[in-house]
Image (cartoon, rainbow, N blue to C red):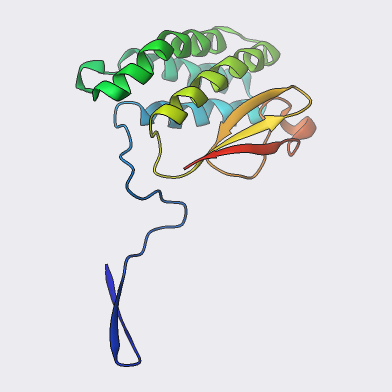
Length: 166
């Protein structure tokens, strides 16, 4: 809270950072997965198959290490049906050496993480679901600026924001 003196009247105003969600408790067990996902996306956007594989391996390890016993029941119920799928998607990216194969697996990783992000707050900031019409595939981003991971520098800005999770 901040007090502002204006025309002899003290106003009390609450300020939040732009893009910060109010009244939302971010899942401490699952929010690291979103950050790791963004790292995979950035590597694919940059056309770096080696970095994408390494970041996907980090995602697999983090997902395998999630402590489900400390989750609230609603978070546990949302994560359980997606946990194995997320790990399998990321493992496939980690094991693929060809960036086109990594990008194919990234489609399902993105779809499954979107389902989780819709059900469980993963970030205090908005999460943007973006769409590539050429690939007919979605991805998640922490920015509404389009940086297409499916085509990288070939069509970096091809796409549009299709949903915003607050």
